[in-house]
Image 1 (cartoon, one colour):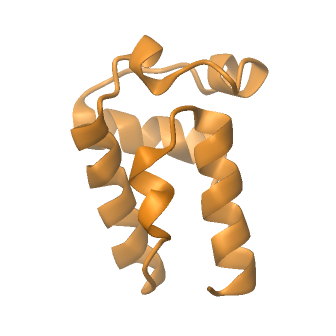
Image 2 (cartoon, one colour; image 1 turned 180 degrees about the horizontal axis):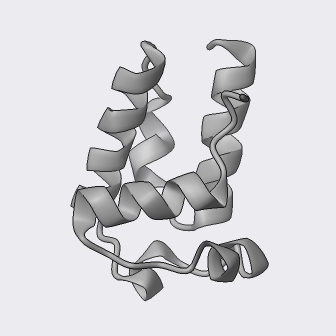
Length: 85
């Protein structure tokens, strides 16, 4: 198992945290589409950030809850997890 966050896992977090059913393949195929196009607002993203921080036992960068797209968010989260920063 990897510590990298995938589109599948992000879709599950969006479902659990914000009640949104999102096709992970759509996010993966269109990573530059804004979160709000999927119905996720800044409060929902903040909740996802909190879940990930608790899961991995480390804080994410302050800008994590300001990411505008799934691709941007996954890049930031995965780069942070890989460096442990």
